[in-house]
Image (tube, rainbow, N blue to C red):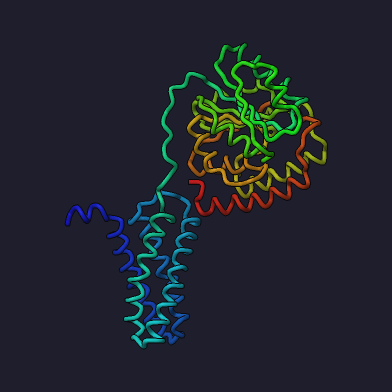
Length: 378
């Protein structure tokens, strides 16, 4: 019996909370119907709301001992579960009381027994879920850096980028690998890169064009080394800027560069129009998702190995603006993020389209916010 109790502590606590919520529900139901003479089904809804508040409070504090500060989000989830329970309650109350003529208090008790199973399972495995991504085994790293470069029709620009990256790591005598992810190029990018015979280069090929988000994720999944950096094929942020990031990577699992921090150096400016569009979107992103990050969208980000594997595993959106999502996933798992000012050179060959891509951003931002509200980045 003692062993049974130990193995089902949460269920037993939940039953006690359910009993207290049921008593709250029944008492207020009786009060609203008999004393205030409110119609039965309106009274059911009112007493239900009070019971939900009671149940959420005790389940969070006592049953599941949840320390999360996301009260609004968790209460929203708890409310959705409870609304499902309310629908079941109203359905069974109609069956038991209206159709079979059972006294409404007794009908409510019978219904509550059925609904408690629904509530417990959903709250345990969703509202107050403590599950997280399975820990990734620690590696014995022989190589220090994996540099991921997504490429689509980059025959004109890729050689200079690869040359600069190789030169940098050889200068500092640092072990590295370069992972070039070709995103279904229709030019000779892959053939050209292979002809270069670059040391420590791995080429990953997508069968068709799937955008950068997919390519970066494939590169992260293919990488095996201590720190994972992704950068652009146009070398808009010189690889030398890694010096500014790597000094923080031991203390911060995610280190990103920014064009808008103090001391950042924008060597070649965007056009006035493009600059204004992206600054507006940065402000919107800050307001809705990442209030303390000035620049989420620039392609020079450094991750610790385990952290990169986790946040990219959680990546869900099929769009260009996945940077917002992976940073928010990191935030949801309480990883510290360091934003560092670096030098940046705007490329005249950039394929980003301010108007069309900003419209996509709005849809993706809403989708990411919904995922965050429901803790799907845990």
